[in-house]
Image (cartoon, rainbow, N blue to C red):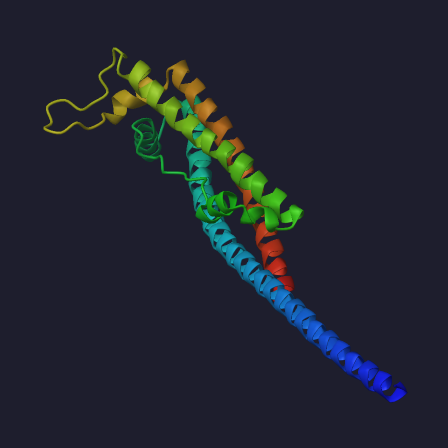
Length: 242
């Protein structure tokens, strides 16, 4: 009887041990599977964040290059407008300044300005942008949602000022500013030089100059912001790749 009990206990113990081993194997398998899925999900998200950061870097470089190109145009505007102010006071305006000013009023000196970033818009719509560090998010948001739209507004304002002046002042002026007895419409520089001496043109030149000075300052600040964004994104990619 004692022998039977010992054998029976041993059999139960062996079965229990087998069950424990099987449960342990299943638990370990589930844990490993969970950890693997978690690792795969974390790796997938990391790759998405790296891809977003790289896209934001490309857009930032394009935006910075655009601003640097626009800054050259802005400096040209400021130089020409300053020359016009000085030459008006002297009563003699050069032909190159007159041609440039006429083209400005005709809308030929305005370029397209686009404040949008495809990578930023994609990151917003997908929600992936919120996964970036807060410090980077804030810099990017300030540039694309505040500073660039504000700069674009100033560009639009300059264009609308020229358009209004052209349509409401120049067209209704009694002075005929174009060459006579020619087959094509061409500005008469002498007539236009006399017209530009009117006080209203001086006010317009000053308005253009003041706004363009603000544009220049904002351009430089946003360009510096892009440099900071590029630095932070490169550092962030470096951390993700470790």
